[in-house]
Each structure stands twice: as structure tokens, then as C-alpha cells.
Length: 278
Image 1 (tube, rainbow, N blue to C red):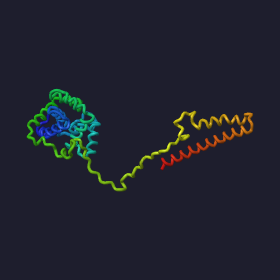
Image 2 (image 1 turned 90 degrees about the vertical axis):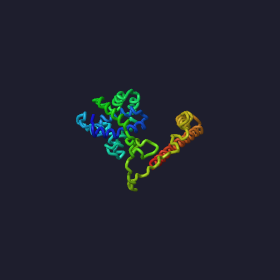
Image 3 (image 1 turned 60 degrees about the vertical axis):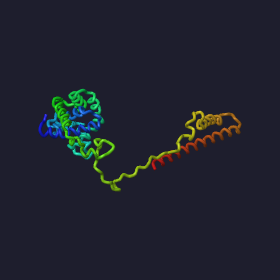
Image 4 (image 1 turned 180 degrees about the vertical axis):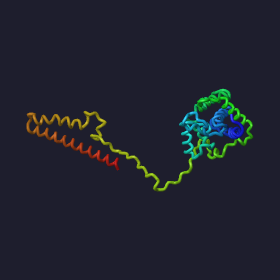
């Protein structure tokens, strides 16, 4: 475990970080000391934000308080970009830690609380949150003890929350992502208004008003059925000419009806296309 300036820096930050963790996650003092023990080991007391000797060859290594690595490092960098914060800033590091412990790593808080004793809590948090390749529990436990001692011997000023945490009332400032104010777009930059969706209120059916009926009860069915029956009767039935004329008249009437319905359907389809296409 580092001493001298590294431990002094860690002692100056640990109490207010622990105060935040107790506030934001309803943790006990020992729980927060266990978290700080892990963070202290990973970042050498907040003095080594970039991993010195990456354990993954040909990688950029870990970065930040928790030495976030791989996809987590990329998520942290994206978080900093959204928030307009530098990656070494305390606000960026606590904000991302907060977002992970409230989101994908919230189980780490549950396991931390369930563990017994400071060393048990240090190990529980490491397994659930850090998942380091090499554990170094002795170093983590030492940093946790330093955090607890720093809290107990703090004069009160080191537990005062930084100004950036007091900017918003009504919600934890650690949950904020204060993006820089964007300039007001010029009229040319503003997107064109999106037209509301077209709502077509009139139904388009083969025979309006009949789709809800059984097929045998529709006019369309009887039109073609009677046409099919009447045509051979008129042509081949040995009826009086007046009867044949009546049958032909009925067939013609049904044919006119069918053609009219087909024309109405075609017009309805054209109207529908006009309404949708504008």
C-alpha cells in the first residue's frame, strides 16, 4: 500500500465519498469503508487513474477510481463525454460509480450489505464489482482500514460535500449528468416539422358494410350465384320468351350491380392512396 502523498490524498477524499455512499445507498460506515478499500487499492489512493501495467496485453488497461476496463472503460468515457467532464474529475468518477451501482452492478450493494465484518465486506464488493484477476485482498483491506480511520479522525471539513454535489435540489447530485449548454439552433438547423400521421376514417371493403356478415348472407354472394344459375336457364331452358326475357333482365341487373360495386371499390382504393400519399 502506498504511503506519503498517496495516503494523504486518499484520506482527504475518503470521508466525503463515504458520506455520499451512505446518503445515496443507505449504507453503514463499514460498508462504505469496504468500497473505499477496493477503490484505494485499484487507483493507488486516487493517484493512479491509468492502469500502470495492464493485465490484458495490448489493451489500454483500466482507468479511473475503479480501474474500469474494456467495455466498462468505454462506458465511462461515454459518460464523461455526455456530462462534459474530464475523466480524472471526482464528479465524473463518483457519477459513473453511482450509475453502475444503481444499474448493472446493483447486486454488489446487496452482497456488500449481506457480508459480515470489514474484511468480509471488502471481499464481497471485490467479487461482485471489481472481479479482479489478481485479488490482493491484503492491500484492499489495508486501504479499507485507512478509510475507516480517516473517517473517525476527520475534523468535519473533509466530510463537507463538494460544491458540484449541491447544485440541484430534490435529487442526489451524484445522479446528474450536467451536459454543457448547446447553442440555440438557427432556423436553417432546425428540423422540419413532422406531419401528424394520416388517420383514414372511412373503411375500404370489397362490399362496404358486408365484411362482418357470413358469406351466404351478402349481396355479393347472391349476385354471382343467381347469375350463375340464371345464365344457363335463359340459354337452354325451354321457357316462354317472356320468362326468358325476365331472367335476362335479372341477370343484367345483377351484372350492373356487380360492375357498380367494383367501380366503387376501385375509387375507394384511389382515394385511400391519395390521402396517405398526400
